[in-house]
Image (tube, rainbow, N blue to C red; front, side):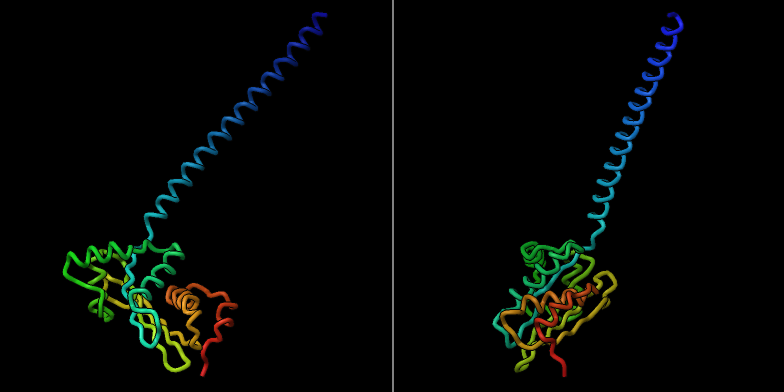
Length: 195
């Protein structure tokens, strides 16, 4: 009987040790989970802080029913949807530029866009034009590095004129200027203008 008690006592000890080890493993796993969650949230904060800032000027328009301010807003919205830049708000742009005595009207050239970008303290600035030529619509965009005063990229895209599809054409052009692959179905819907 003493032997059974000793064996039972040893078995209880092993069970207790096993439970303690399970608790320790669970606590370690829980601790590891919290550490990973903390690292992940810190990484997300750092990633959000590293987005470059961009200002979008009015987009010059000719032969279309959308004015330069509205076209600039359309481009700005499309860039915001990409979530790759900290896009300066149109109202903040107006406020800052008004206080500096500058206006976006007729500010389409490199010198003016770079000056605007410096006043707005952004990394990049984008401008462009949308022009209709008979049955063809040409969307031209230029992306500038404000600090260096250089052109990062340009894009010129030609489409069949379809006024109800300008937003889709802008999406394609924005993707092009930032090197984002377009959905092949989008282009076929618009029947890209080919000569």
